[in-house]
Image (cartoon, rainbow, N blue to C red; front, side, top):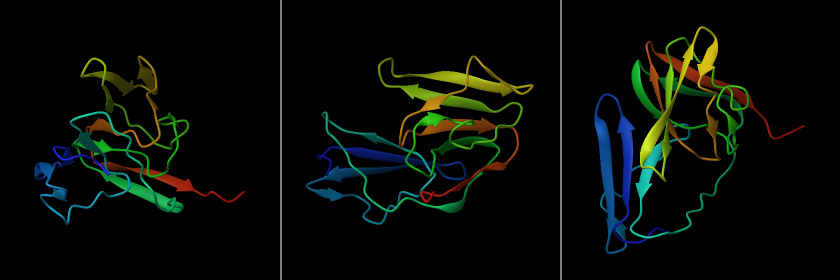
Length: 147
């Protein structure tokens, strides 16, 4: 449901960015998959509402993280603080880069000695961030929509 001229950017550390453009109603690469927990950027030529529909993932969820940069998001559709609410367990030296569409720049939050500086990042539903890690790890969370 996005207009022609839209561009989808995904990232893998081993291969870098993959770019997929929509033109004449078709995506350049029809087989590109958006994986739960992996982030992406979508550039659209004009304001548009994009709605994602699907089943909420439940159970033990894990997103692998490499040493270096990772473009990731929560696997469940919740807003909240990245660690306290969304289950990310930071390690000393982790840096979270959150994109600000108004300034077209990033705000940074560093986790060091058990504290966030300047504050724990707050994410919106489906919002992706860059996490830079000193060592590989994972974002693990157990989630259930049942009481």
